[in-house]
Image (spheres, one colour):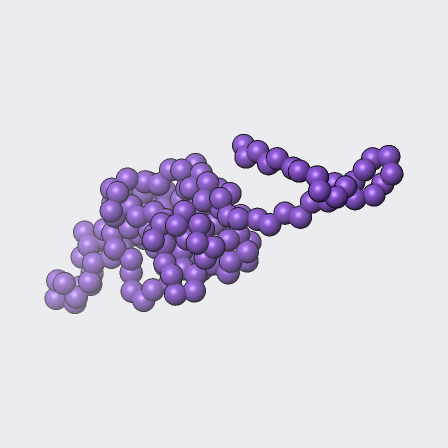
Length: 155
């Protein structure tokens, strides 16, 4: 399901207790037993040394955007057992029995646009249905106006 579909059905709102998971690559070491039990100095793997901090920066910025969008939710980083796949930066929203993939670097083969993630969250959440009760008051008498018609415009 998509983010917009979930909000259109009313399954996802700002107040929903969402569990957001950010699975991101961390630099990894090869198995030290690969060469007769001795650690090979060439066995340390990193995509590029500057990428290591890039994953952490993106993680922190996306986590902040998710906390702002879902104040009642929680953000978990690398929640699963084991190490995440090399190159991974996946953002998944879980609520109830549902799951929405917000971003997948492994699928799209690019870094997320932080503005794009914020825009997707705000765009979807701004479509949630809100019940508004209005009373028109006569400014002279101070009494409610009965039978008044009101036109609503969406911007």
